[in-house]
Length: 457
Image (cartoon, rainbow, N blue to C red; front, side, top):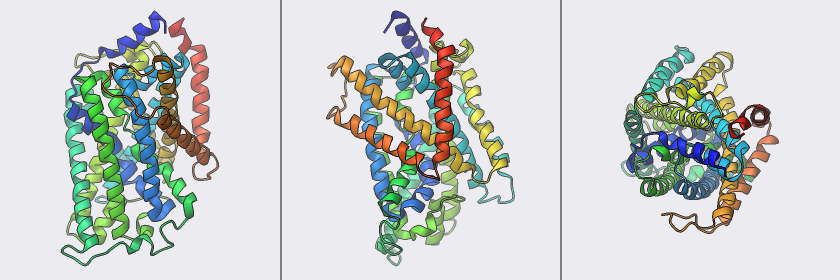
């Protein structure tokens, strides 16, 4: 790496370090426990039936191996550009450019997907209100929160995440009581096999459900992105990553296991989602006001994910600005230490969501299909970057964490992700993600050739 590249890499650390390990953990949970679980799980169940538990287990393995690799690289280079900067350092400036822009675009689209989900949740109480109106209202709130200092963002996200984590725990407890007949008639586990067996659509259905399951874990990498604003990266990041991944796996598997036991899978699974399957479960249990309360929780979860995704977008665009890949204004901080210009540009995803809601009733699925392609591509690049990182550095002894069993986890995660992308290409339900994703990558590489590489000449 040239001295100029080193300088660009180091400049990305100019963000103030204010986030604690507790905030990092809750922010990461906030990014990952959101619409992918509360809404997207309905699509996954529609594909796999009860076999969706296997789908989420496969997705969990991919997420865990990715976080193993990313944790080690982040400790070696804690910077706001995170895996974008790592790709630039170990693969090439074109890779850093491509990863940053693709991740930014995927998160921008994800913001639109979360906004679409918020609008759907609000129709539980206000069915006659147009969905675009709710997107406008909540978009203004989220942009305002992110425009304040990172401390305000951290506090907001901490409490939002606490609400939904608490709700999942309560859901698991109530569901456990229903399954085993504590205070009511036991539902047992017969719903696992009552309609077509545990895998009603075979393993192909289980594999298709991995596409939505992987999106439920998409967002765990936020811990790495926040490294540039962590108080003590060497201590905070390993603890936050380990705690967050284990909690996610536990929450996802248990909550879905309870859901499938209480309500027949065909009642919660659907290819076009109009209501959270978690709300359907509470309605089925007949607990007074529980469905409305759960709808509030999933609404909070979607807002939390919108908040976190907008944070991620602004920091990744800030990183591009610091690297000289965008106009310099996007690499500047305001008096509160917030990259406000990058934040405002990143809010474009909310406008996209509003337009799609006006034009098409299936905006949620389309937005997430496009975002999933970009997210999977970025994760593939993280694995490739880690392999180059280890090849160049070996096992750095001064780090507090090392990815175990190298290089097996990286290759396992890499092969599974490639398999998912290939599956999307041959699936009529997901091909459109390729139609948008591949042209985007080609366009970014062309723009690098004419513009991006100038930053390193």
